[in-house]
Length: 492
Ligand SMILES: [Zn+2]
Image (cartoon, rainbow, N blue to C red; front, side, top):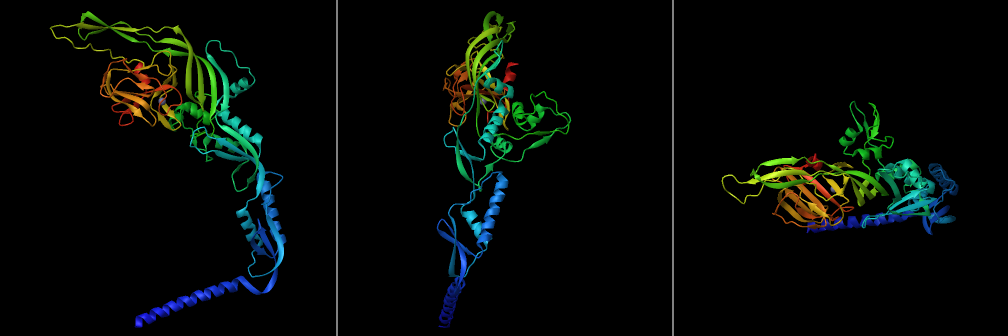
């Protein structure tokens, strides 16, 4: 009984407290005597009362002046829909002019006249990028600077003025330079709450690096070269030159204590250069094995040394942000023919036994037909290792060969980056991988001979153009415990 009574007492105490609170609230909002105030409305909605109209107007003017200075514009637009009316009210609360000014600013920011630049991505699923600028010309200039990061200034001028020198023996003619995104520029009122680019340098940096962050610098030490600094910061040498346009070649001299940029770029736009080129490309010699029944079984005899030749290729190339994404070999002529290496392999069985296959030569064969073009080498690409060479130009559907004899340990489709790919274990510590193939002609577990076709060239998986991604690994499987190795060492 006593307990219940005590409980009731608590309940009534809470009820009383609620009543008092409500009363206090009423009392604080209104007063008995009316007063003269200025009621401030934003889009017809009252946002507060102030004593001094002039003070609020001063705040607004001052804000306008600050923004005019900040953006160097002649006009800053105050939020539309602000209305100040004198009235008599019983409301007690009066805000300061500053408080009301802040409410207005928060609800509806001040605006300046400028341009909204919309960059539509060319990959589906990616968000469009909207950039605010005050000056159209400034944006044009920033785009020009981005292009100049990838294309030599003289080359651009010659392309624009149609004064490119003709190709005598080898060389390049630019056929087109463009940005691969749909960019629209629309005049509009821009909220001063949003980021507005006002200088070309900052905008160029954003377009090139994808974000505005502090530059990453490195101080040159004794013995450094452009190549070694680039490598230490996971950049290809050409990429270092993109980030540091003041250098024109990897052979430029550095001085100890000099600061160089080592940041990675992530361009917001794609600078595309399409070109017509005449290039001399080394053609690897073939090794021809001939059986010889006068030589003892297993004995090899080189009767002619191989010699690499030179093919002169006429190509059409597409380079996006400095990376070759497409190569078409239009024609090719042989400047110096390659000379086959001829190896005689003995088949004479001494003392019986037969049916044992001949031992093949230890040389490796090139995995594509000729002519071809190596469009990307082994090494760093913007912070990641490209663990292979890319061979292009032989065409979609052209045959791909096993670089050496071995066992097919993988022959499958990979929906991610590799597409149709094959891995061969050469049973000597080396593994080779052949990726982005159009089709496969071998199956897992199969034994292959050196030079045997394993598939056809394609662009499956993550490949921007038709090419073979050809990788070499030591002491283990690719992308597992194998050590990525430059495949070109096989042909030296
Ligand atoms: Zn590749």
